[in-house]
Each structure stands twice: as C-alpha cells, then as structure tokens.
Length: 478
Image (cartoon, rainbow, N blue to C red):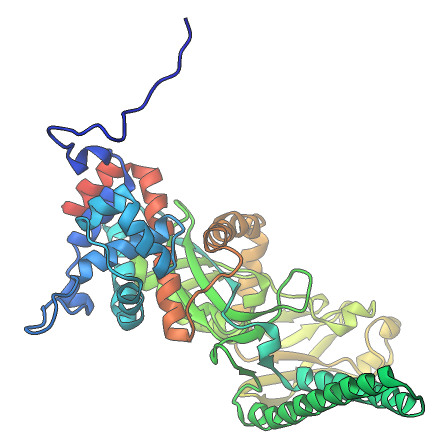
C-alpha cells in the first residue's frame, strides 16, 4: 500500500527542544563564515570592538560582518532582506545567536565601516596564499562595467545635452505650431486643447532652462560629466548593444590555477588603458611573489604601462591593437618595417634602409623619426607604401619593450584563450548574483565596499568547492 511521508504536527509540544546546532550540517558554508570571522583580528582591521559605556547595548561588529558575508554568499545584499532573513532563516539564527538587527543598523554598519570591511575581505586572499592555493605566478586581468544607482537620463555629457536641447526645441516648435492651428479654430474643445498645449510648452521651456543650467555644471566638471543620483558614476561604453551604461569600471586579477580573484579595484574611467601596471602591482603584492606573468586583452595595451610592468618585475602578455591607417587603406603598415638595432635604422619591404633624422617629444614621450627621401622617390612600391614624398616611421625610445612583448605573444599563441577562460567567468558569476540592478550603494567608497563583499563571497564559495568546508575551517584555525 503506497502512502506519503507525513510531517510533525505543528501544534505538538516537545518535551526537550532540539538544539539549533542540529539544523546546521557539518559541511554547511555558514560554519566556514563563523570560523573565518571569529579568527579575524577585527580591531587591527579597523572595526570598533569596544562597547559604549552608555546607551543601549550595540551589536558586535563580528555579528554584523557574519550577517553580511552570509547575505552576499546567498544573493541577499539588501539590508531589509537581511533583516527579514535574520528572523526566519535557521542558518542565520545559528550564525548570529538568534540576534535580529533592524535594517537601519545593518545598512549603517556597511556604510560606516567600508575600509575595515574591505580589509577583512582582503584577509581571505592572504589566507588562500598561506594555504597554498595560488600556483604558478600567472594571473589574468580584465575590467567590466557594472551599473550604478543612476539612470542614463540622470547622467549628462556635452553630447547628451546638445541632443536633448535639440529635441526639446523641436518639441516646443511642434507644440507652438499646434497652438497656432488651435487658435484659428473655434469651439469648447479647442479652448481646452489650447490650455493643454500651453501647459506642455511651459513644461518643455522649464526643462530647457534646466538643461541650460546643467551645461554650466558639465563645463565645470573635471571630466565633462555630471550624474545626479550617484555623483561618482560615469557613462561608459559597453561591448554589447545599446549606448552603454552609467556605472563603474571594476578591475580584477584572477589566479590562473584555481580562478580565485587575488586583487580588484573600482575606477571611474571607462578605459582600461591606464590600469595594467596598477592591477599587476596589486596582484603581485597579494601573491607575495617577486616575478609575475600577466595576461590582458588589447584594451590594456600601452607602451608606458608595459614599461612600468617591466620595472616592477611583471611580464605582460597583451596583444597589440591594429590601429594603422595605412594598413586599413591597403598599404604597408609599421609592422612591415624591420628595426635593426645595431645600425639604428629601419629596413623597408624593398630592403632600403631608413636612418634616423630627428627626435621629438610628444605627450611626454621621446619619439625618433626615420625616413630616406631618395629611396622613396625611386621605389616601385611607393604607391603601396605612402601618398607622401617619403614614408616616415616613428619609434618610441623604449619601443624595445614593446618589441619583446610581441615576440612573447608570438611564442605563446594560446595566451588570449587562457585569459578568457580565466578572468571572464568570475565577472559573469558575480553579475548573476547581483542581478540586473548591480550596485545598491552610491559613491565610489561605498561601491568599493560592496564589490569587496561580492568578491569575498565568490572566493569563499570557490575555495569551499576546491577544498571542502571542514579542511578549510581547519586551515583557518591553524
């Protein structure tokens, strides 16, 4: 005879209540969170661990930090949702000792302890290094755009203002034409329609005045942008469809062996071009190595950044972007000219030698110019090379560093495939956890705190999958 399993009667009293610890399995990640936070030196990280002598008793920072780490590990980032979960979630009851702070206390803790929370998140990377989870000194660096609490309509740039002013002026002219037409007609409905048109015209004129006032603010800003909801958020282009987002550029360096995020940063610029040496230095310090290999996409290519990496013991693998206008027009590009260092000349595709004629300084870079007028005038391939009198080749004084980079890239053809499978998955995972709204907090310092908690949650879940909860807890305790 088949039957269904029946549960316990809700109204049945129990003589001896079960222990709350019995509801939390030995491999439950919540136990890892408890051990990790308990082993932190909270005072040294910047938390206030001394209770006030007066007033109501406060919550210990360890309790609130555990609450947040659990929330970010389980896709519950809102302070109001954490408040609800603390009163009904058995795991959180176990973790906090059945304490249930209100949402204002929870939110204020994250807002007021940003640097300390970021330091606590960084401690887990130190732990991973001590355990030995970082293998060969190889990381992949990438950046991704994350939405801020600021819509595109609340972000202003000179181009956007120009377009919006044109649209408003066009709408005003259209309504005025409709109003002229209505004035030539008669009837009760026409009078009501004229009143509505006048109201629309007045609202548009008010919007025009607001946009004109905004022009002065945009001109006065350092980067030509103004965001109203989150002043630090910036309009950034994305590789997908649409006109981009208003948000932040999150940088990360991911270990190539276990795909753990070893270093991260949040910047307000949409370009990655100036971030390579900074992120490589953070990753090198986090790994505690003297030499480091770094993989990055062509968006990071910059001669100065690669030179800075070389100076700090970082070997970069970055593909060089093909930006030659001559190559796009079907003519010889710079890569078709071979530099001969022993003679300090370039050899052109026909074998002629182009000596150095001049040196200039542009944007702080010392550039050498090479050409040979006589060879170009008698060259049969000149139409395939240049429309000018002679072909000039420019060489940066430190271009030997870039040449060495190109040789490394040629010897390692799978470097970019390895970069993609290393660094792009963590970003996708974190964005899936965050949801469509992405960041919940405003201003750059708060956003850095929020992404730090997300990265701690990602690394924590990743290490539990690699080692298991019990071995990880044993490693934390030792």
